[in-house]
Every structure is written in structure tokens, then in C-alpha cells.
Image 1 (cartoon, rainbow, N blue to C red):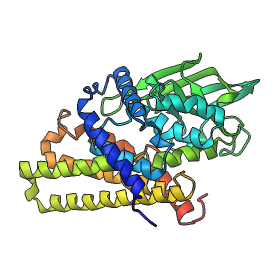
Image 2 (cartoon, rainbow, N blue to C red):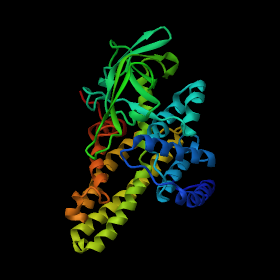
Image 3 (cartoon, rainbow, N blue to C red):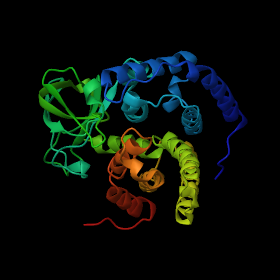
Image 4 (cartoon, rainbow, N blue to C red):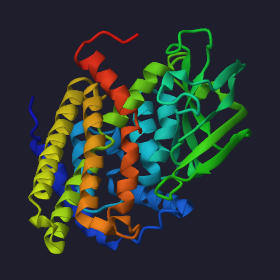
Length: 377
């Protein structure tokens, strides 16, 4: 498989790199982590800047290779992360682009690209654990609307979102993977209640969402009724396939900074630490190559990442935890200081083996779809 870039793609890289070099140094300071209204405004402003410069549509209007170059170069330049735009740009937007009707694409994609609307993800439920198909939020058809009742948890950016990609059960009698529907829920609809959740790191980018007889137009359904599980697999393939690509670049940068810090504070003299950092360097280089392989495979299959995304997500989530464990070793007692670099990142890294499907779920996907092993009972 060819992992090299075409001359046209390298030309895109050069133009983007030059634009970032002129633009990023002049950006205003970022709001504090707890100021979510401020972060929403900042993230939308950055998206508008990308839109005005012609770089807004790389997440679904360009080839996977161009998307990968964009994520790599923006991270290297220290450009703002997608932040509150994460779900819209990397989950809901690509899903609507792949599965939505022309009317749905026209309604929802341009506002995401222009930095006008924020999306959140309403998949997980309090009593379902990591078993996404065990969801119990019900949607009853009533004329040209669904009436939705239930609750969601770990709903990313719900407190500042305009829309929610929502999974509901529309046929409780069907086999559990076949009675699910994917809806676009307006967050200002009557009956929607949002309760922020504070994480171990002290931030509140997640929330509980309660739905009490909320009416959602049938026109907001993406895909057919009861075909939501298949549509969801498209969403999750993007989440596991390329959504973390920029973070691999960030981890490689942090690894270099750790080596500098270790040389400064004397911990570099520990041969076991040097071996650990060297192994992590090889790990993240391999993960970047795996990302390129997944992108090449996606281009060959129509642009939607495949099961290789689960291989990447499984190994990356563990490698990220190992990286920040190594950071704690480099910092020593200072790793308990929340004002020191990498301390909050270490706390947030604990969630990566759960987010976007637990490691156990990824093992099952790899066993069944990559290795061809029989499904467990």
C-alpha cells in the first residue's frame, strides 16, 4: 500500500503551513478550561477563520490524505484544537455527509463549517455501560415527529451545543441492534434538560441530558428508521479512524518535551527511563504509520474508515496513558502539581480506554472483523 503523498497533496501542505505560520501567532489567548461559553466562542471563531481562508471543509470535503495533512500541520503549528467543534466536525458532520439526504447536508453541514453551530454526542446511557446497543431511550412516532423520552450521559459539549447526534430505540420488539434510529436533536427543544458533569481533571465538557416527551421532526432522521445501528457504525468509524490523528502528533511533541525536561532535571541519567521514552517514540511513530495506512484504506473504500480504526484506537489509548505515566516519572513529586504541564493531561488520559468504545469493545471488533473469529455468545 502506498503511504506517500502526491505532489498535489504536498502542495496543499506547503500552502497550509505557510498560512498557519502567518495566522497562528496573531491569535488571541485561549479562554480558561472552565469557561465553556468563552471556549465555544473561541472555537467557533477559529472555525470561521479556517472557513474564510478556504480550509474549513477538509473533514469531509477532501480526501482522507488531505484531512490527515491538515490535522498534522495544524497540530505542529500549535493551532487551536477543534474543541467544542469536535462532534460536529469529526463525528456528526462526516456522518451526515456520508449518510444524509441532500436537504440534510445543505441544512447542517454549512453552519458547522462556518463556525455557527456546535454539536454534541448523545449515545451513552446511564445503565448501558459500554454496551451501546443496550440503550433504552425511546422514540415513539407521532405523525411527522418522534416523541423522545429517556436520558443520556457523558454527552460531549451538551452545555454549549445547538444540536445533538442522538441514538434512540424506535422498535423495542426488534433485535436490539435493529430497532435503533439516528436523529438530529435540537438542544433548545422543549423537554430537554442538561446537567453538566465535572470530571477528575476538574473540567465539565460532559453532561447528563434528560429528555421528557421531546418532539423531534422525522425530517431530522439520518438513514432509515431502525437502521440507526449501521449509521452509528459510520459515526464510530470516523471517531476511531482519523479523529485522533492530530493527537498522535501532539503526543510525539510531548515526548520530545519530556526528553528535554528529563535532561534538565537529571532524570535522563536513569537508563530505564531512557528505554521507556525510546520505546514510546517507536510506538508513536508506528501509530502514525498505522494512521496513514488507515487513511489509504479509507480512500480505496470510498472515504469511510474501516475496522483498522479499532486497531489504532486500541493501541493509541493505551500508549497515551503510558506516555503520561512516563511524564509523571519525569516530573517526580511535581506530577501532583495541577499547574505543571502534563498533570491534567495525565488525568484526562485515563478516559481514553473508555471513550469511543472501550478497549474490550475494540478487542471484540478486531477479533470478529479483522481476524474473522466467531462472535462470542
